Image 1: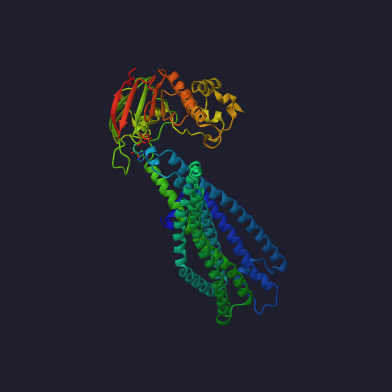
Image 2 (image 1 turned 135 degrees about the horizontal axis):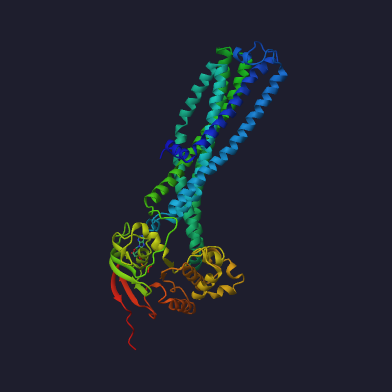
Length: 570
Ligand SMILES: Nc1ncnc2c1ncn2[C@@H]1O[C@H](COP(=O)(O)OP(=O)(O)OP(=O)(O)O)[C@@H](O)[C@H]1O
């Protein structure tokens, strides 16, 4: 995406009224400033002592007859105060404008990601998405603020040039010609700003991934005593980022200094031309020098803003790419109030196949199984056999590439995916808990749950230990539940799943990481639930087959065994 398209895209995000107000404020502030500058000519004239009066006839005609030095100065101060008020209003509106555009973009991107198909999401790098939503969007904000500064600078430049044209068109045209030449000479610098911006995006993603993965795997890092290696790899990604930042600072700093020096040269040339070639009156020349002296930093600022904008533009392109992909993989929208499907008879997978992109082998290959209602089904198989994928199909998280899902004998309609999901609760091997209280973690499944329902769910999940915690239900569990043991986390996750009042409960390796005591507690809880709801137990092998009505064994994405459990010979 080039910078122009990016600009159009960003402005498209802003409410038109806001853009118009901002431009109107910029224009009014700059016009007031221009009038104030023009007023300097009669003020200088009124001081007397000038060789020849310079006030053009049209300015004199606008002023009351014989306006003295005092009233002219007072008018000047009023104009400066008015300009300050307008600039202040413009600054406030600019910040609001910027916040609104950036927050809208961030929220829309986050929403698109949350509503994307799980199959696509699971293949993305979460740290890249986090980077786009944090660092990337901040770069977009910086870019936008520079774009607005650029707009303000351009309005100021046009106003000043207008004032200068009114005073001396020859000097002004010479100044414009020199300015355009300088702009052309800086083409290379602008191109490099865009290029560095792109590299900064890559470097930022690497740093984010390094932080996220480093922190997520800190336990393993400690065990393997790999702290030093992690730090080295982190430092090298950071130093790559810093390298790009320094390159950019050097190129934009050089631009400023070149513009500053070139500016002095241009100013000297203009004064020389004004005095020796065109005999411009001193008051006019002094005012013009003031105008151009103020224009030089504006010009330098415009170059700087342009560079910063070009540098930030790739971040918006990255954001757009993520949003486009998420949009392309969006799940069908669901109605605001989802009524769970009853799942009174069961869920049947008929000849279901799932092939992940880039994988030579199907994760599920022509699967035909029925999960019967209010029975407990054990889904077993070696690692990679396809168990989790099958669970994802059952939960309507993954739509099969081939075959059908039938709920109570009816093919599952696209629009009913959320209704099926609402009927199912899922507990995974490493349950996810928010860094909040136990209560908040539980009611996440059903915000309207009563105290009695919470207590019943805790009891059914053998999680009554919660009442003995220092603050009971109000105890904070820490990041991901670190302040609880694995077994406690698992039982809270089970209680949360039960609080959702599911028809189907899927436990994905829910006990495999637990010690025998905790495993026995969770298993006993599951046993008590037998017959009251549909349960799917996922595991590599089934060490304890009690209360299991059906065993489905998968290997290489195919069903290799299905039927009642075989009781070992006594
Ligand atoms: N998001 C994904 N993208 C690409 N391939 C995937 C994805 N998820 C699973 N697979 C592949 O699909 C196959 C089945 O994986 P799945 O996770 O369903 O097996 P599993 O039986 O649950 O394994 P485990 O017991 O190790 O969790 C594997 O070859 C796996 O690598």
